[in-house]
Image 1 (spheres, helix red, strand yellow):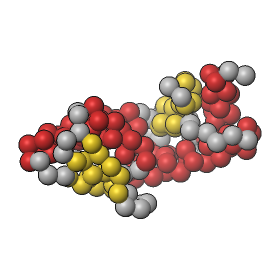
Image 2 (cartoon, rainbow, N blue to C red; image 1 turned 90 degrees about the vertical axis):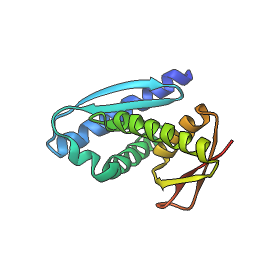
Image 3 (tube, rainbow, N blue to C red; image 1 turned 135 degrees about the horizontal axis):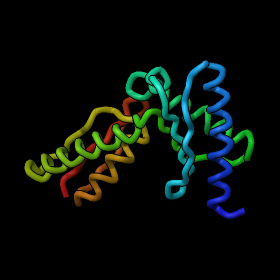
Image 4 (cartoon, helix red, strand yellow; image 1 turned 120 degrees about the horizontal axis):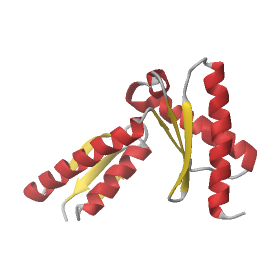
Length: 154
């Protein structure tokens, strides 16, 4: 089985699991599956699904982990599946990229490191990528749930 076929299989397993969950919770939502780079991506779109996102995406993170466990149970392999609900991650990515650009400008101007607020692994990855693109370095410090990004001067 090719890498793409394995990722598509992960997406199918995840979609089946999430569809069952939506049925149990009596929520309406449509599922979109895709392969983005080296991971399966599943999105739930539909009516008001804010309760599945939760405050600061906490419920979304938990659902993603449960979905990854469901995929693992079926395949025996660890999944890097990415779950998005109602475009939350896409909007969050945009906001984090803007924050990273503003922080990079601040660090370039002051020459001093800047520590950002604690973030989830997904959020830290987005910031690290944007900071690298701006030509600076960054590192993660602390332990969960207080793990955060520090942007360093060049």
